[in-house]
Amino acid sequence: MPQPKKDKPDTPLRSDAQRNRERILAVATEELTHCANAPLSAIAKKAGVGQGTFYRNFPNREALVLEIYRYGMQQVAEAAPEMLACGEPDLALRQWMDRLAEFAMTKAGLADAIRLVTSAPGAPQKPRPTPLEDAAELLLRANHEAGTIRPGVTGDDFFLVLGGLWLIDPGENWQPRVTRFLDLVMDGLRAGAPGR
Image 1 (cartoon, rainbow, N blue to C red):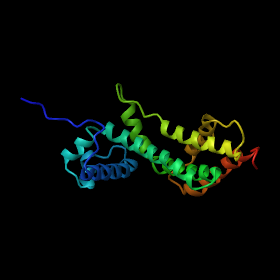
Image 2 (image 1 turned 135 degrees about the vertical axis):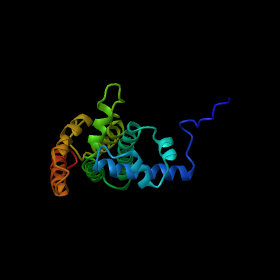
Image 3 (image 1 turned 90 degrees about the vertical axis):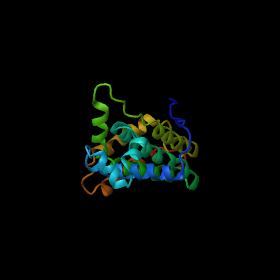
Image 4 (image 1 turned 60 degrees about the vertical axis):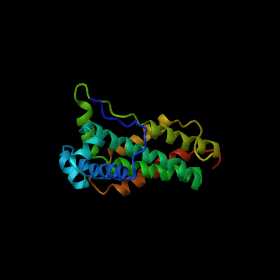
């Protein structure tokens, strides 16, 4: 008996299939952020897709959770060059930090789901934040060239300082605290900048 033809991984999805996938991701992000063990059947139902469509896109919980994380990181990373093209490098960096913070704060509940799927023996590893690292390097490089931040700041330095974001409780009114924190980070980055 002939085997069914499988699509290549890089074959673009039909527009209706892409909409289904995006709807599943949006609903799953919301549901898994609130409850790390949200039933996949409930996610499929709320997304308005059948079980077959759901499992064709995401064969298991691990695949779904890791794709939500990867997709969110990619969206934040892709915002960096757009922000840089629309404004001054230091303003673009600050805007991007806001976008990164929003991702971190609003997806904090998803961290439990990621831990659940990556902590079991033989489970897939959590995706590395490479797109975010690349975006930060792009923004830092533009700021170094413009003289708007202190010389020598590396991506590692940047993310080490931003680690303070994860100490802010996402359950409280986090926006004012995050704004103050990121303003302090920017003040530190600008201190000693040659162009200031």
